[in-house]
Image (tube, rainbow, N blue to C red):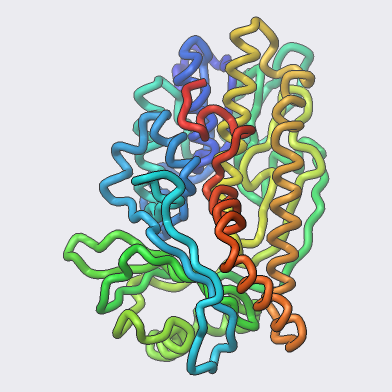
Length: 414
């Protein structure tokens, strides 16, 4: 931070992918605006993240527009195909009920798997290039909204002033609570186990979603490691008590349980990192904005990973908020005024609530072993499989491509 001035046009709290994307999107289009990103995590802690994320085609276009994708692409794994099954864990055969081809346009995959470290590194480098101030190791302890600006208090006692404060500090957002924004939320009694596995045979870019009684089990293809070893990312939903027990077990027991769900189609498997479990729930903010204040990413919505749309919803927020702020500044409007920020809320809130409801229904419908319901859902999946236009619609939705999408998600500059 430049010690000569503690005033910024925009302060983003949270240096995750969404917070950085908001900052980069605004700074690239309006270099006249001064921007700071404040993060409570110690500098460099993001480098320890061994997870990977599914990036939809629209988010890939946005990252390309932001000048990040060229750096990320060499280590990104395209999803060339996706299959869906519905079975019990002990079933000897898992019939494929639904398949999706992996392209939304010739040569453009509907999604890529990207290492979290690579994504964060590219956005950080771009932020530095755009003279965005990165303030790490100190969080926001409070803020006071004024008529013309908000005073932001950092935990180290420094005070900053800004026209717009963006909270991108995660699903348990402290800033959201400070702003008095209430949420609709509940716990699913499930946890998501995440780990990376090595396997003998190549995955050929295929992603798999197995609906099991305890919850979905996803196998997501990763780029081979530096030694050419085949790898995949696992997102495994279990009841919370079972998930806690599994991640506490030794490697032999965990791999045995994993193998019963993973199967043998890719040969012998081996866990590459320490499995971790995160509790799953639904959290939706009742409001996305207040005067001089906006929520983005998980601070606005936390959804079940069953459709793999959590991060991509956050990127939609980033693209929409950046576009609203940039256009308001071009018109000489106050970027923190409530009438400006309500355009962002109007754009994003319905889509977010719709996705939250969809993932909630899907999780409740598929995370059980009720025979009649199983028959109905399997019939439905089979029906979609025989309807190419319906499949194309679902893949377009999953890719995030639509005429109403913000410009960055359509691959256009703001």
